[in-house]
Length: 477
Image 1 (cartoon, one colour):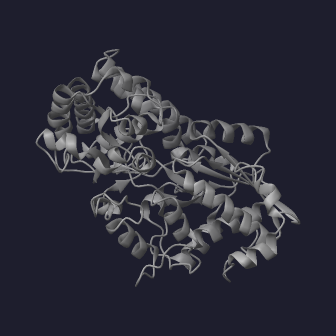
Image 2 (image 1 turned 90 degrees about the horizontal axis):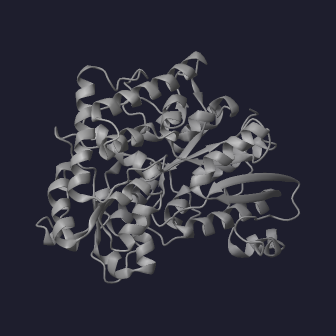
Image 3 (image 1 turned 180 degrees about the vertical axis):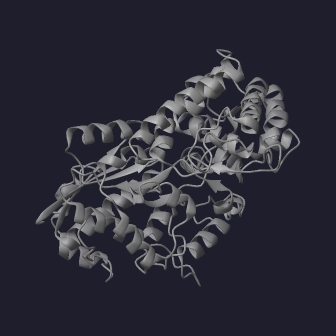
């Protein structure tokens, strides 16, 4: 990787008038739609592949940001958006073909799986830490492989995954402040389903939210797929008993509070169920809430939030699963421009936080505020963390009739959020286990009765061990 050079797009503030002077010809490109945006008259090209964000306002902001960045740097910026469910397949196809985008935003744990085909980002991550301060541990574990001493990605942001619950339903069941333990879901969630006809919304399918929820259950039950040394321990000693306890819990939860539809869910299903009034509780980001604010305000006013639920021994972990991990493939034609774009975006991530309506949180939480923000000034705020504290205390996007402080339980989310692969890092092996749904399948087989819980755990252990062995032979774990 060549030394990092500053293209200086936002070291000076580019206001709207100045931008138009730079990029008066971009209007024609914008008419092509959000999937293809070009800054005209540039001397080089930067092709970016982004997921289609669950909060559409973010894509609108990002596309405009990319246009302005390209215009200021005389670079032809092309932004393509793709549905989350298709992203990993598209990345694999590009890597196989040896051509495609220069910069890819991988959302989730999958980035490590592509490490052999990605450029190292060691220099970029070191530069970012020198400028913006220490990176959050959860983000570091999603982008750094200690076995190879390599940053295969740049984890620029992450998403909080709290409890989302309908207060009116839980109030009628006798728990107005919502669940605080996993067992509450069985007792009170079951009561809500039986007495009010509304089920819980935790998937048992091959999709990203099921993956996240099941791993959160395991972590909160003090169970693990791998230990800190990257060894599969599903069937080992006391850990086997705790894994069994978590799977048997899911059997009880399904019988008490859920319906068969959860076996066929996709990543949008729990959101859709909450918005439609068909779920009393989901474990997800705030995206469904934001959607309901626009489409079903009565539901939005009834949605409240809570931190990670406690397991039987008081442990409480949420599992971050929407992770913004930028990677640069070895086939990239403009790796310098890609990495500079990442660095400048990290510097301006306060805007990403705001324009995602607080869905995106920064990996460099203590970075100084850029001074470029096109959001209302926050008195006394000097860091991204200050903005987080203010906005989650007083949500700037709440509806007029909504209660104050609904996002307050998320203020300390860094304390109860961990990574896929907990208590170890998210290695290439962890990424493949995640991407092949080994854990959701383990839970689903037992709940459906296809195998006993013990048999299903052993099946999962065999699948995971084969994956780990293959990566270990390549020297990547």
